[in-house]
Image (cartoon, rainbow, N blue to C red; front, top):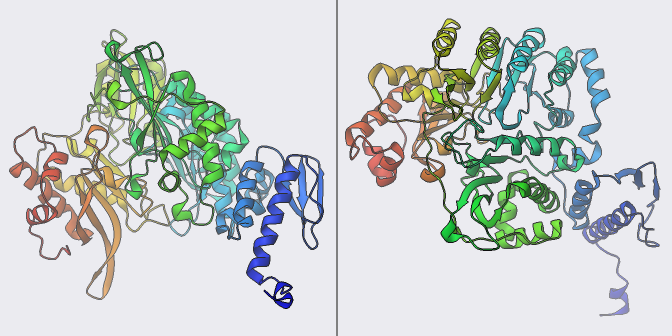
Length: 613
């Protein structure tokens, strides 16, 4: 290399890389209270430390818990990469510090604009235009538990500041909708006054932690999981760094009872298992433990897998927190489509990721081969509906049907009154978009059942409505391609008019690729699309068959593509009719039926000439 070549200035790309690298180095040293390396700041770089923050090139750099996410972003810039627009928005303005700004907007009757639409989701407020010119507020109810006074309070709050209904979700949660701009802060104050804090229920955060719906009430469960979900919930609320993730995150605790929590569809799933005496040892006594499972995201066609790590109950929250911190450090902040935990695991591998978690915790975790573990499989796919005898003698729970998860405020108040009059007010929400009243005596069951029907609801359902799940759809979500809730009811009505089903069937309708209704785990899963019919584009669905979870785990296969909705109710009815006519015997599940047939065989069961396969 000549002297002239040696002195050639860096290219623009090289200069950008070096600037990012030195900036990242300055930030890392500053947040640790170390002096900046002389000259490392580059041209025009200034550094000041004080007031709990650091200033680099005029940019405020956090020195508290928020620094973990900031350092992860800085590492991306130091590598010469570009942050996604959402990451840049979070870097420019911390969404946790928007309270006064949101108050001013609410006082002025204004909705957020630009990146503030995204940032305000961190407070649970979603501006859902163009579907509705209003906010939706997603709550966070740990373990799906709500007290009757809270349910009544939410109904009153909805009547005052939102639409007159509550939407039950597939995470045992509640959403308030049709919130005007000037009522935004009334919702945030009102929920907190009900001891419900929606902070972190949207945006790049850990959503409400789920657990077994009948935790503490199910005589057959291995262990109570509701206390763990509550502990995890409060840990998140009180650790600011838990809001620095590169993407949303789900955590579930499964206790091995009769109502599934779908822990294998979560980023972290804690699954209760038993170590029997014959598989025990001095360092692993017989008892109940939790398998640590990671990477579930069925919208991306993956389930959480056992990591080999076995945990005691007392370890779960700390391990989950360590996993989140590693995810904060290693998650993709350049591509939103690849920013979930699954993709970190795909890149690093489970063994290396667990090693990072152990380094974060400063200790090794117990590894146990699956052959030493006994998994309990007693799930009853109908247990979330109807009468469920509790382990407490003489007490029962009563699951109420909400075919697409919508409850009017009058119904909410009526159910709250029943819970207060006939039980201790404890109410559970499930991942099946329904609600369970608990602790009802044998003697009071008839009165409660009559009260449920008086408010226009039911505690009995055929297997279609009991397993019918639908996201909000285009009536309230800007991403959805069809009105899924209305479509779901129309499908159920058509099936009921023709068939009587003798096996549980799950039909899941989701409006877009986000798969909020988890269409890939339904016996029949539908995802909305637009279909060309003549010169028009109409609502339609791609139809997938054979999904499942738990012991029936499987991703449904797309069998029918681009079906206009006008044909969907008859097509679904035909699929179920063919199942009943062609199954091996009356005990064969739809999941097993679909699993033993090829795609072509499934297509041939239903003759629908206009369907594109």
